[in-house]
Length: 430
Ligand code: SF4
Image 1 (tube, rainbow, N blue to C red):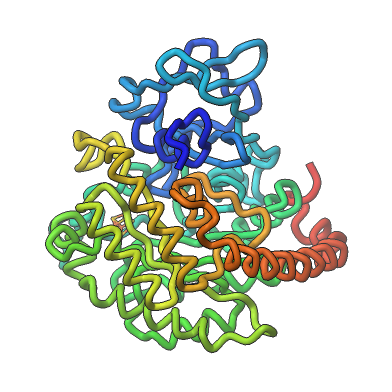
Image 2 (cartoon, protein in one colour; image 1 turned 30 degrees about the vertical axis):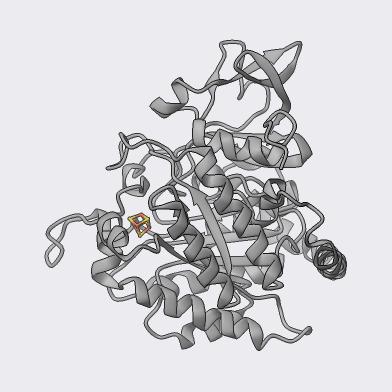
């Protein structure tokens, strides 16, 4: 592995998650077309969206105290943005462009960026009310939110409250047409009565019908696992279960609501069940992947690696976030993880996905800023040639999938243009 972040963009992405970055006074990100720093309901995203060398999209911590003592500084120099490491130029970077539709209004008069936000190049939507672990009400006298989470701190701030199906469809169409979005991710917290999938289904059906994009769903595990067969039939392409921590004792400490309500085994059973649905898939079906999501840095690195081994053995794909001690959260004063502890975790992420022939990096135009993608773990390999023949096979699959998907998208875009202009004018004409 090249161990100099100035020469290894993957290592730079990881090191910036762990150390954050200072902003020099020469930076005027929004005036220069960059995205505002938003504390959205995405929970972990609070930073500056940038594009690193090799086209790696990222979200760099800049507001938390640890970022104020970072060795990295972003400066603007003769019109270009550059990252310096200990005063030496490390990388020329781009600002992730602010979408034109962020300030457009929905038919109900709300700014579109309060309905959905771009995270990297995909659209993230949190359509329902706040996760109930954050609330106190009869039968739930004490908050038991996850300790790293900022979702309940954001009420009434950058992201709006409940959104109608009409508004979400308008924003999805605007993002699809103007930003070339190919993937929409729906996210909810916990609601008593396990209503989260019932809530999401009408949004999913309409967005799929109008745009044909790939759809992901991130909710707690539903006790009726057959609901995932139904989501698959509906055209959902990815289900993600955030159990965050594989160490049972740490899980109980950090995620008290999840422990009380579901328990770690319920999450693991859902990951496993949905991975089995992927094995039933034929070439004619919509793609389908099961994800297990963890946060590295909240447990021993070996435990994160054990989680990666378990998830990939099921045929599911791990999503690995780097812990960020967000302002205002219960863990605000904790330290972020050390880069040297994270390198083996992300290296193993890539290796395990390749060893289990998992379909990573196939979908077009999905650049994720909030996490290091499994395929980005390749930057951390000691022997980059190790998986050459598997990478070749994956590249062939990727080409076939992209051609099929983008051809279908172009047809749909042409077919729906007039319908959208008539039915959803706020999403098409400004
Ligand atoms: S389940 Fe935990 S991480 Fe998810 S929104 Fe609720 S408190 Fe936050």
